[in-house]
Length: 152
Image (cartoon, rainbow, N blue to C red):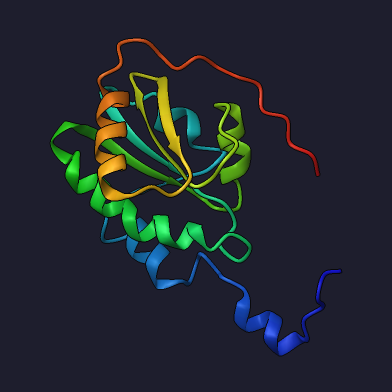
């Protein structure tokens, strides 16, 4: 049975991505594009290799804060090869991720010239990110699309 939180507790457990310092730094000083439904097409179709991080609501899924801290380091590790870096707005991250067959968030992957190459799903260790993303970034063919069915 879910626990009902009183108003003060509910307020302090809510993560406002517009005001949270990790997300402000990510979309500010770190230079990540805040990917939304409106700019997804333009973001994904950039020329060259584009890093994409898919995140969920950080109030419910605390791993979204973890990946917001890790994402800039991944961006630096692949920086010489990237023409863009993006992090989904957590309010729509799950909906965007499901378009690419991703079912487990956070996920980190690549687009190249508008084609989705694939992604690592779930939090990983550093060496898994480097090895897995290197393999994905080297792909010459886009990822096979799968159907992801979400229940509400």
